[in-house]
Every structure is written in structure tokens, then in C-alpha cells.
Amino acid sequence: MMVKMRRRFDGNALLYYTLLVLVLCSYSIPIYMGITLTIPVTSNLTTWALNILVVAILITTLKPVWNWVQPRVHHLVYAMDDPQLEMMGQMSSSLASTSPEESMLSTIAETIARTVKLPYVQLKTANGTTATYGTPRNGSELTHIEITYRKEVVGWLDVASRLPKVPLSSSEYTLLNSLARQVGITLHAAHTSEALQAAREQLVLTREEERRRIRRDLHDGLGPTLASLRMQLSAARRLIRANPDEAEQLLDELRDDISTATADIRRLVYELRPPMLDELGLVVAIRNFKLGDAPLQLEVIAPEPMPRLSAAVEVAVYRIAGEAIHNVVKHAGATTCVVEIQIEPGQLTLSVTDDGHTLPTGHTTGIGLHSMHERAAELGGTFSIQPATAGGTHVVVCLPLES
Image (tube, rainbow, N blue to C red; front, side):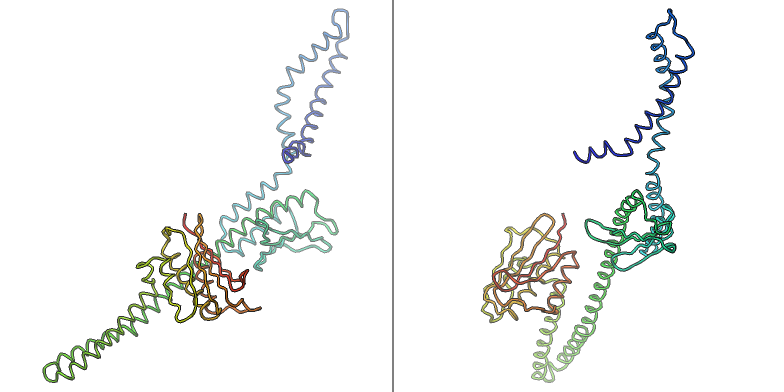
């Protein structure tokens, strides 16, 4: 209700109707005075009849006068909104042809300065990128405006007044604040686009590095092993009649080498995707983590039946849970560890809680924690680690799910 009342009785509307009344009165009163002074009142034309004549003339002529006056008064009163609309149009058309952040900021600063006719405009983003247009005049007052997006500061706008020691008017300040909100949306969109591009580039680099590593492992490890097996097999074939004992010994060595090659292949396959995920499923695979001789009771809580997850999310949950459990076994000295998987619309939450040692003050992130954080970030998720309420450590990972 408050918003409606403000819009109904704002200053522009009051000025608009006041001017309409004044213009119509300035038209009607001279007509009335002219008719009453030109046509004298006689016995044949009484006062009320004269009034009826005046009203009839006004009714006849008022409609075309209204049609002519009303749009002109409206344009006069609401012309103050035109600079903002013009600026929005100029800014939109200019930004459509610029993509790099620095070019975009320069375009915004120049558009604001030229349209509002300001001598100096500086635009600075939260990541430190700055663009300026013009030069502040001696004695000009600088106005500082925060640029926000959803209550988050994404930049700052500094503008200089036109005249020395004369600040901007309230209407200009309101206009710039309105523009700052629009600029905030633009800056946030640009930052999101750049972050997405950086994530894509990092994903490509990571994928290529993984391919290079697999190629190196195959070329330097499995390739020579298979070549050696072939030579051993040829040697055994030559010796099988001439020296059966030596051939048998060579075949035993060949068997051991084949076992080693098989283990290498399994390792490569495991690094691509743990076979246990396909053989047992995610929940059972986590329950079957090898704890060694640690006196740790592992409990896994998950929805039943477990909904189908994408391959990337499934592997990430398995790897992160495995790393967290490994840290509990190695560092926490805990007796119990609870792994819980919660599925909500659009999100999976993985939590790993133990009753061991709490995190030391000022602890540094090791390779394991960094790896868990990276795996979550690769899928657009979040990772956090903090002391548990009842002692121990609490790891929480949130991953987005496809709808």
C-alpha cells in the first residue's frame, strides 16, 4: 500500500495536474470574460442563459484544446526521465559491441559522463579494474556511489560536479543511483561470464593434462612391459625343446610380469573411474573403504533407494568421501566416523563427521583438503571443514544436481 500511495501522490503527478488545471483555466476564464463583456445582459438574455451559452461554447471547444494541451504538458513534466531512458539506450547499444571488461567499463564511464554532462567519471570494480573518463575540475566535489548486486558490493562509481564547490542535485544523485543498480547487474553478469570462461579453460587444461599423464603411463609403463613380454615369450618358445627347465623358469617370470602389467592396467582404469562404483554402487563402495587396522567404526547414511547420479557427481562424492575417511584414519584418532549423503531438489550434500581430535587453531590446508576443495569446485559446489559440535571434525560438501 505504501508503494501505491507514493506513486499516486508523487511530485510529478501533482505538478502535471496542476499545470493542466492552470492551462485550462487560462483558456476558459478569458472566454467567459469576453462573452460576458461583449454580450450585455438584457431582459431577453438572462444571466443563467448567458452562463449556459458560455458553458456550451467551452464544451464545444474544450475537447480539441485538451487533446492539444495534455500531451505537451505530460512531455514537459516528465521530460526529466528522458536522460535516464536515453542513457539506458545508449549504454545498452554500446555494451552490445564490447566484451572485454576494461572496454566495457570505459564504455559505461563515457556514456554516463556524456549523457549527464559530467566532467569526470571513474568506475572501479571489486577486483580492482578501473576505468575513467574526463578530468575533475579544480574545486569540483566528488560523489561516491556504491555499485551493488543483491546486497553485494561489486564496484564503486565516483563522479565530479560540474561547478566548483557545487554538489550534484538530489535528482541527479537519484539518477546516478538508479544507473548504479543497472551497472551492478552488468558487472555481475560480466564477472560471472569471465569466471565461467576461466572454469572452462581450467577444465580443458585439466583434461589435457590427464590425457598426457595417461599417455605417458601407457607409453613408459605398459608399452615397454608388453614389448618385454613378447620377447620373453619368443625366448621361451625357442627354449621349450632345447632346455625345458630354463623355458619353465622363463615362463614363471613371464607370469609374474603379466600380473604386474594387469595391476598397472587396473590402476589406470581405477583412476579413470573406480570399478567398485559400477560393481557395488556408491553407498556400498563407500562402506567397503579399506580402514587397515584402525579401530574405526564407519557408518554410512544415505537415501534408500539411492537416486541415479551423474557419473561426475558419483565419482566426486566417492573420491571426497574416501579422502575424508583417509584423513580421519590418519590424523583424527577417532573411534567413529559418520558419512551422510542427503539428496534435495537440485543439490547433494555430503557430510563426514568424526569424534576424534578437533582441528588445531590456524591449521593449514594440506594436499588432501585442497584436493577435496578442487573436486567440489569443478562441479560448481562448495567445500567446508570446521570443528564438530561434540568434538572432532565436520566436513560438508554441497554439489549441484541436474534438475
